[in-house]
Image: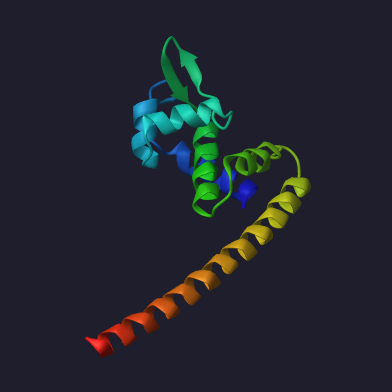
Length: 140
């Protein structure tokens, strides 16, 4: 997931509109990924993104785009930012990334079980609520 997504994201980002120097400005980055400027700054503070700084301007590389895509994916599936950072930081551009794959697999399996338990609890709550609604409709 992580290493494949990094490669795929880097390839996609290569075709994106960037400034003449190959960098993407913070506003363009926010629009492209549907996040706020505040979120980008927060991710930078957490060490997830490392934009180049030109005065007060933040300039994002293709690597930053790949990392942001992975951060957003990780958050969508319920990983903490700490977990996402740890998994992303295991990526080695020239290596086989076997360690990263093992860690991502282990954490993904745990998260899948957690999400399945949550879904089961939600399904049970929906069933109970549905029964209560049917009972109340019959009384009204």
